[in-house]
Amino acid sequence: MKRILDLISARMEEAFLSCGYEARYGKVVLSNRPDLCEYQCNGAMAAAKAYRKKPIDIANEVTDALNGGDEKEKIFSEIKAVMPGFINLRLAGGFLADYLNGMQKEEKLGLEEPGHGETVIVDYGGANVAKPLHVGHLRSAVIGESIRRMGVYLGYHMIGDVHLGDWGLQMGLIIEELRERKPELEYFREGHKGEYPAEPPFTIGELEDIYPSASAKSKADEDFKERAQQATLRLQGGYEPYVAIWKHIMAVSLADLKKNYGNLDVHFDLWKGESDAGPYIPWLLKDLKEKGLARESQGALVVDIAEEGDSKELPPCIVQKSDGAALYATTDLGTMLEREKLYAPKRYIYIADKRQELHYTQIFRVAKKAGYVADKTPMDYIGFGTMNGKDGKPFKTRDGGVMRLEQLIADIEEAVYRRIQENRSVVEDGTGQGPENVAGNQDPAAGEVLSDTAGSGMEMTKEEAMATAKMIGLAALKYGDLSNQAAKDYVFDMERFTSFTGNTGPYILYTIVRIRSILKNYQDGGGDAGSAVILPPVGAAERDLMLELARYNEVMETAFEELAPHKICQYVYGLANAFNGFYRDNKILAQEDAGRQAGWIRLITLVRDVLAAGIGVLGFDAPERM
Image 1 (cartoon, rainbow, N blue to C red):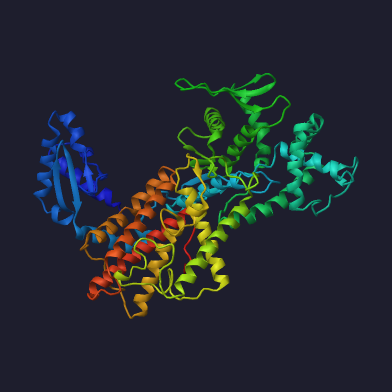
Image 2: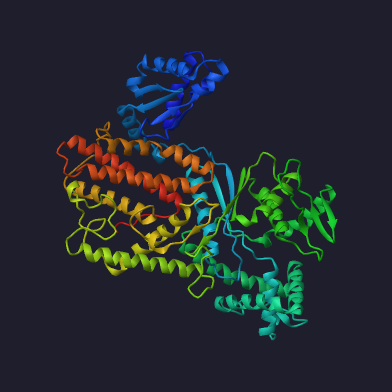
C-alpha cells in the first residue's frame, strides 16, 4: 500500500506535467503550518528559476489544472495558491477515510516492506564479560534493540550481535588476580596433565569482585599489570590452562548477561565476542601488509586512513601493538571478515558511545580501503550521548557509585508499582479519577467514565499489579531513553518518566489500555462493528486523528532510513494526543447514531493497532489494565 504522501505527490506531479513543467517539482510535503493547510507543495518556487516565471504564476497554473478536474472531489477538499508561490492542500474527507479503511484491510496496516529480506548486521550491546551490566550499557541495548525490531518489521533480515568484550586485557587481569587468590588451582600448576574441572572455580558474585580488584591493583602495581598483559598474550596465543579459565569466565558471565538483557526485553541473534575474530587476525595482518596498507610505527603496525577533504586530522589506525597484542580495531576488523564470510550483509549498523566516533571512522575506512567490505555497502555508526542524573553528570547511585542495570530496573518498577497503588486506591472509592489524569481521560462529560484507571474491573491482585508494574516500568525506561535523539545527552528523571501524563511511555500505554476498555464496553453492550467502515470525519478532532493515522507508513519507513527511533516516539505521542482529543470531544459509547458509532469503533481500533505496532518496534508492550 503506497504512502499517502506518495499518492498526493503523484497527482501533483501529473498536474505539473500537464502545465508543461517537470514532474519533480510536484513533490508534496507535510505542512508545518497546520492552521493554514495539511500538505504543501513548494515546487513552484524552484520551477520559477528554471522556467523564468513568477512562482505565484506557476502555482496558479497548477492549482487551476487541479481545480478543473475531478481530483478536487476525489483527493482534495481545498487547493489554493498563496504568495509567494506555495500550493496549500487539504484532503477530501472521503479520500482520507478510504485510505484508512485500506490500512485496516492490509497486513501490517498497509506498510510496504522495503527490506525484501536483505541482511543487515546490527552491532549493539558491547558489554564486557566478567562485569555486571550497569546504566552505561542501557542506551546501546535499548537503541540497538529498537533498530533491530524496526528493520525486522520493514522486512529486512536483521542479525543482532551482542559483540562481547571477551578477549582483551580484562581477561589477563582476572587470570592473574585468580592466581593470587587461589594459586593451588590446576590451571596454575606447571606440568598439569589431563582435563580441567568442568565446574568454574568462582561464582558470578566472586567474578564480579575479582575484576574491579584486579583493575585497581594494576593501576598501583606495575609488576602485576605486566603479568596481566603477559597472561593476555598467552591466552590469545591459545595457552590451554588460560583458555580453560576463559571458558569458565564466559559460561558464568553469559548466563548472567542473558538474564539481565532478558529483563530489558533485549535479544540478540548472535552471542559472539572479540574472541571469535581470533582465527581471522593472522591473515588480516598479513593481508594488510601485502597490500601495502599497513606500516610499522614505533614498533606497532598502523594503517593510514586520512583522506583528502577531511575536515580534521585523523590519526592512523593501530592494528597491532608493539608487543604483538591485538586491539579493539584488530578484533573489529576480524569480526567484519567473519561477518562477510558467514552472512554477506548489505548494511552494517554499529551502536556505541559517541566518544568512540574516531574508532569507527578508522575501522570503516580500513575495511573499505582493504576491500573487506564493498564500497557500496553502507556502514552506519550511531553514537549515543550520556544518560545523566539531575545534576547533569553521568547517572550514579546515591552514594556516588555506578548503578547496576538490574537495580535501575528494580527501582523504576517499584516507582510504577507505587503509582498503581495510588491510582487503584482512588479508583476504588468510585471517583474514577486517578491522580495521573491524562488530558480528557475519564471525562464524565464525554460519557465514558471507565470502571477503573484504565481497563475494566476494579480489583487488581498484587501479582497482577507487580506484573503490570514490570511492563509499565520497561516502557517508562525505554521510552524515556528513545524519545531523545540518540546523539544527545539526557537527564534520567524517575518521576517524569513514570508519570501517566505528558510525553512518557506510561501515557502511551494508558491510551492503548483506554481504547481496549472502550472496545470491550462496546462489545459487552451488544455492539458489532465487524462490517462497519471508517466514515469521513465530521469534526476537527476526528479529522486530526485521521490525518495522524495516515502518516503511519511514512513515519515507520523514515525512522528506519534515518536510524531514528525518537521519530517513532514523536509519532505515537502525537497520535495518542490526537486520540485523547477526539475522545474528549466525542461520546463514543453514548453516540445514538449506530452507523457513526460503529465507524468510530473501527477508527479507534486502527488507533490501537498503530500504537501497538509503534511501541512494538520500540521494544515494549501494553498491559491489559493499568
